Length: 285
Image 1 (cartoon, one colour):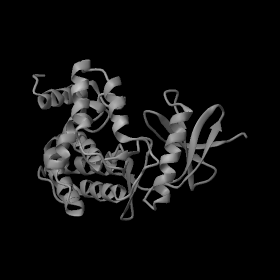
Image 2 (cartoon, rainbow, N blue to C red; image 1 turned 90 degrees about the horizontal axis):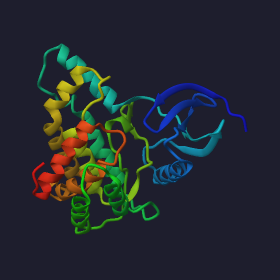
Image 3 (cartoon, rainbow, N blue to C red; image 1 turned 180 degrees about the horizontal axis):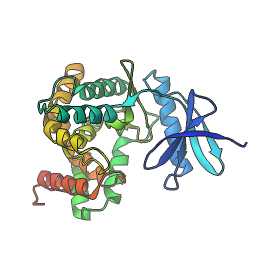
Image 4 (tube, rainbow, N blue to C red; image 1 turned 90 degrees about the vertical axis):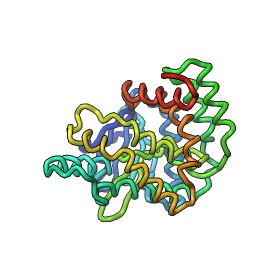
């Protein structure tokens, strides 16, 4: 079938997003670095989340548009939490108000609440989180094999759970509109431990290096709120779930090591993660 794309409305490291057959749908077209198998997996993960009644875009079908595969989703309106954070940061610096208010950190509470809702479901029909983490650790650069295997050995000693996990809970994947939040991009979803999702978010807050195209003000504010944001995030999640930071901390090591395989973070950020890994292994960076 010949499909006609609408206007381009977004782009990520692995896909481009276009309007699709009217205003209420979009198509997420894969770039050359993403195969059809990855799209099929993402469609399946998205359908699992949708069937659980979670706040996700309704997934429709896999399509081939002029030789490029893509997934058709319900269109989600609103702004991402990262966009709201950047706007707030620019305004804050302009008004010379260095101290954060509760409103400035609201994205942290939204994320904790969304993750708690997600983690309330089982996911035995999704890929095994632990095997996915091990695979990423072994294929990542930056660490010698002996360190990778030590990290994996520690991972194997952690408790094993079978809950639905998103895998990439960053503020760019959470959309806010009229007081409700939607979480997108389920390609990394797995069956496993909520603590790994929490560790992923904590490491992002602690070490993220913003891209150079983002306003300087955002980087200034981010540096001021990294640890306060982590404390607020964990306080909110613990209030909802009784999972504490002490239970998440052992997951910081394997999740930091698996993040070294990610394409979307800078070498500078990966160097910080290597320091964190070696500190936890008892080695000098």
